[in-house]
Amino acid sequence: IYSKRESSKKLIFLDIGSEGGKLQVRIVYKHYHDKDLFEEINSIVKRGDIIEVFGYPCRTKSGELSILCHQINLLSPCLLDLPQTDSLKDKFLRYKQRYLDLLTRPASKNIFLTRAKIISEIRRWFDQNEFVEVETPTLSNHAEGALASPFLTHSKALEADLFLRIAPELYLKQLVVGGLDRVFEIGKQFRNEGVDSTHNPEFTTCEFYEAYADYDKMMDRTESLLKHVIRYVNDGLNLIISVDGGEDTICLDFEKPFRRISIIEEIESKIGRSLPDVNDPNSIPELKRICESVGIELVPPHNNSRLVDALVEHFIEPQCVQPTFIIDFPIITSPLAKKHRTKPGVTERFELYINRMEIANAYSELNDPYEQAKRFEIQKKEQGINATELSDWSQEYVLALKHGLPPTSGCGIGIDRLVMLITNQSSIREVLLFPYVS
Image (cartoon, rainbow, N blue to C red; front, side):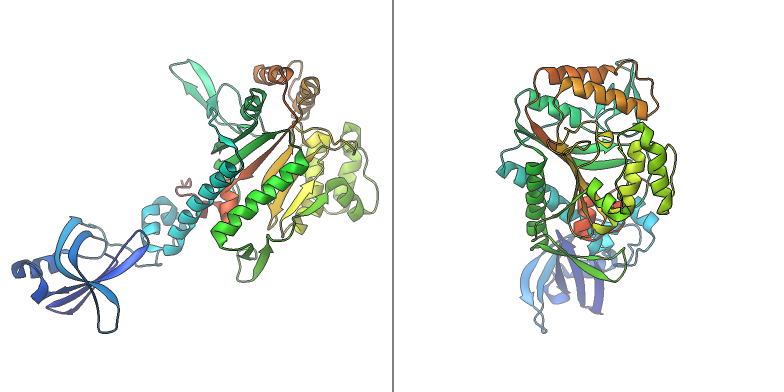
């Protein structure tokens, strides 16, 4: 029951709702099945109660479709006062008691219905393109596949420390080695890092891999997937969103081909000079000078990959309001990506940005086991880790590559951020049913 109105002692109106629909109920004394129970049921039922109604369809004098009730059964009483519709303003309370948010804020409920629809359309696109959905471990004795801090737990039965996964990438590529040429997985990842409007320690991704594809084909695939989802969820390829969460709006055009920006070329055009070899540790002092000359505040450690990321964030990301592929990342920033076939020093990797927010990350997969082992060693050195030998899991992955990974491309999409974009939300907490609150 969303509202109750007594027109007279013998006429009561209820507004009821379920599954997104609403209907008016007319309870008229002369039509009620048991006249002795009429006053009792009137005194018992109230806003928030869950009821069962028996009656006949009718229309009021104003033409509103209603149920002419002849019996009501109380199925479950609401023992506490239910907030009025759209009156719940406290975000902490909305996140903590999400059931009240869903009951009293139709806009919030629509976000999560849209989220379900988005995931359903993603699966439909993969099914149409003959990808196989798989599941890989959430708990394992390693945490690799991305540069991130993991969560650590302990198994009493196994008497072993285990990690919550930070990415399923290395498992999925092993499946491609095993002959599953097109695979995808939608699942939770966990990273023990910062929290802000676009980051949450627990988040949902979609990762997919295709044998005999490269990053050019994967850009086409990613663009096709995004357009499919936008078309069916948004009912068209023009998406209206707010600018920085304010009242001004912009139209994101998904009909046009997505723009492509090459990193090194774009940065060099902005600074008016050539960059040093960004993969060479000896270039760090020069890269620092370039960053400082344009007002970039640097945070240690000052390694090659972080300095390149700072330049991308400063010069390129602000341009990426409309759907944009940032392409050709330096080798030092992409330990799992294949070298570009024609451009020295960079990889066949892209990131998709929309409304200045990273939505996807993808590349032509490195399938040379010896080059991969070398890249892992370089990555460890950048992280300040003693790289005398690879971790057991890195060795296992290199072993899998030695059995032959076909030319392959893979892509990871942030589901939560995609939902934020489509539902026009500025905080990731608004698209998570139960975000963490202290």
